[in-house]
Length: 212
Image (cartoon, rainbow, N blue to C red; front, side, top):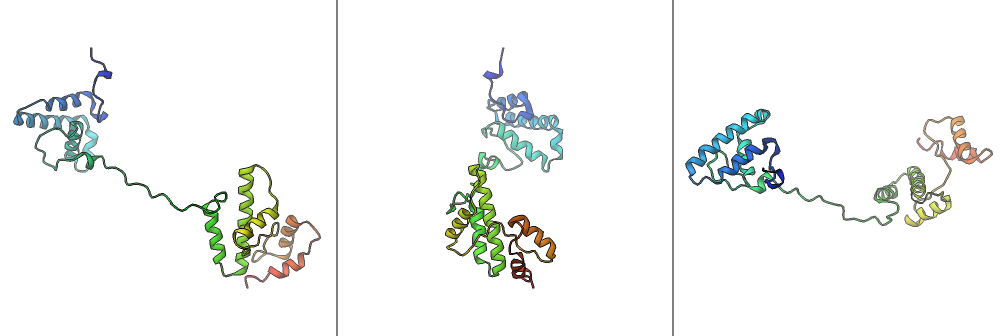
């Protein structure tokens, strides 16, 4: 009895064991004319057993390519199409271009480094201040995720100043006045972050016209 463990592995499972054995038999036929006739018969049988391929563009070309593939490109018969090669049917994928630049501050990641560079190029001082707030808040979040503990705001402020050579100043707990905000809404947000009784009027007057 013949077991699958002693048989050659199936090259294309969709055609089954019998088609593969027929193609292996073609390799043993010495008479070229007889081998050609049998190859044509196998092509017809392959098309009959796989009617779904009839919807594939250039259907018969695909069958001939499969015939040569199953024979390990050793079959010597005349094909109506260019005989394929192993490289043409199984091309190696092009290598993926991996980034070669390493972030200078690996604990913060490359994306935050790009954001810092964009903030340093920002000519508008108000937008640069807003950038500093966003970057500082993200640094706190990254620190908490990695170390599972809270970090003091002064540490984040000091690290951001060192990274940017004092060009970005993180002011923790100070929400920026948003364009169109009313006095009441802005004060409510300010009190949430800074507690009641702070110097809100001075803060509000400083930033309320920043978009004018």
